[in-house]
Each structure stands twice: as C-alpha cells, then as structure tokens.
Amino acid sequence: KKNNIAAKRSRDARRLKENQITVRAAFLERENSALRQEVAELRKDFGRCKNVVARYEAKYGPL
Image (cartoon, rainbow, N blue to C red; front, side, top):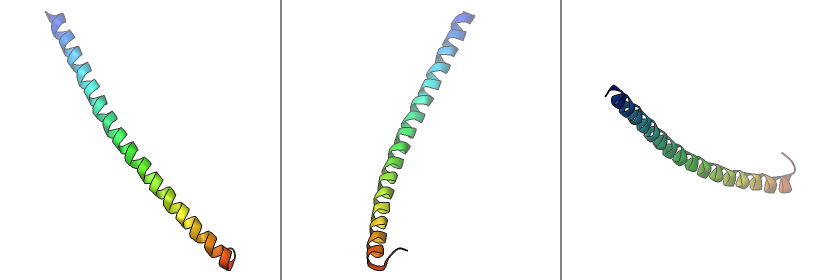
C-alpha cells in the first residue's frame, strides 16, 4: 500500500511537471513569435533609415 501511494505521488508530480513545461513552452513560443515580428519591423525601419541616409548622401555628400 505504501508503494502504491508513493507511485501515485510520483506520477502526480511527473504530470504536474509536464504540465508546467507545456505551459512554459507555449508562453515561450508566443514570446518568440512576438519577438520575431518585432525584429522584422525593426529591419524594415532600418532599411527605410538607410534609404533616407543614402538619398541625403547622394544629394549632399557623406555625413
């Protein structure tokens, strides 16, 4: 009987840990997706800034 209780406790602990890992993985996937989107937007902004600088330098020379 003690072994059954210990085994159940062990299974419950394992399930809890697996659930926590699943929740954390989902959170990290959402965060990763948001960060990838932010990187894409920043790359676009950077490209626009480079374009503005290039046009300025073409007209007025290097900064």
